[in-house]
Image 1: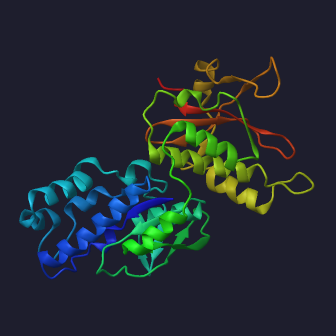
Image 2: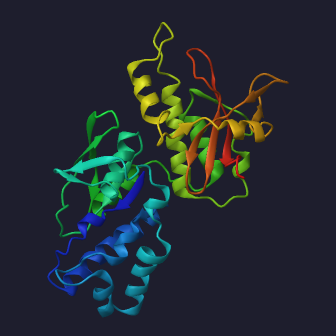
Length: 317
């Protein structure tokens, strides 16, 4: 479960600095609570200049804060994050709408896009604000013009968020834990024994780990989308169109030049057939940091889908 701070709940609604201080203190309590459960609340870099009162922005208001309060907020919003843009799933070309207004490139849009694609993402919002309701219905319009509406859960009280966190699965805190979860949850995939070995020694990045899990979940579901005649089901065709085609595809083939220049690097030991190898040029992509998931292709009914590599991008020039 990912938590994103709803920057739309900063909309200049506060009458004075005292009212805002009380509201932002509640948000900081939500953040401390999330950290107790091994999670972070991701924010947007634009929050560093959010409108707080009708006439004042966050930097102006914080001049009245104590040094420790000001330092903690600026460290989160303006310096260290974490920022959801660094591990974002949707692009500026995706169209997402809430109550008739576009929410592309917002935490609400990002959370909705994640929910559409099988990832649990929730919001944390300021109170008072225009976002003291849950769930928030968001409409996503795909490239083919088809629209779907999803509910994004939203939290603004410590008690409610604590109940959700207590019931949520354990947070991922290492590459080894990620590997174990992926193997357990994606049992339709066949992983090579050393599939995740290339991640060892690299700093663990929570957002990247969760994106890996999302990508593998898509492969897991895609591998099961065949009917009794071995033909791709409508759900399989939807997954293929959404994630394996087009310029924004999550999965794609390597270029001809990469296949030539990196042929040896893209050839992997066969997970089950001793002495054989697989040339796996199809891959899933994580942007930050650049992680790739290489797997066998094409995906056919009644044939294993082999995942042979999860690690740093191989075809770097």
